[in-house]
Image 1 (tube, rainbow, N blue to C red):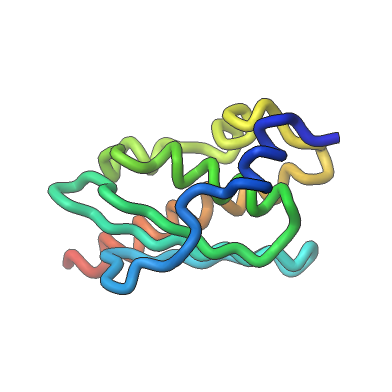
Image 2: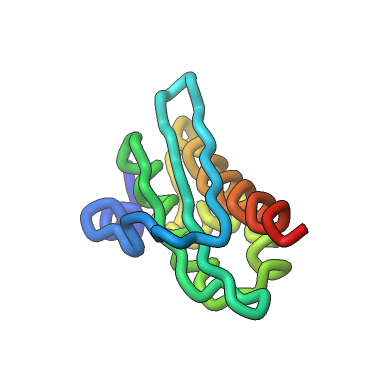
Length: 122
């Protein structure tokens, strides 16, 4: 049902935790499945230098959170904003159709954290 990459990111998630002095924090949730994702960003000179996540949810939700943090780290804010839900799923070699909504949350949480960062810059 799940790809090897999904299982790897579920069993060995990268970048789990919080950043106490985060420049941006984004949280999204899907009440249908009960998944909640929170992403913390540390940004320096418009580059994401650190990113962490906390996710309450299924294996796919944890795997997509882990993958989106790996994909965003080291990217500029503009590059990170271009990371799509589909790109996260493709990076994990796909998700079962009934779990695609979980990958949508990962990109949405990243984008919410970036929006929070931008609000704080004003």
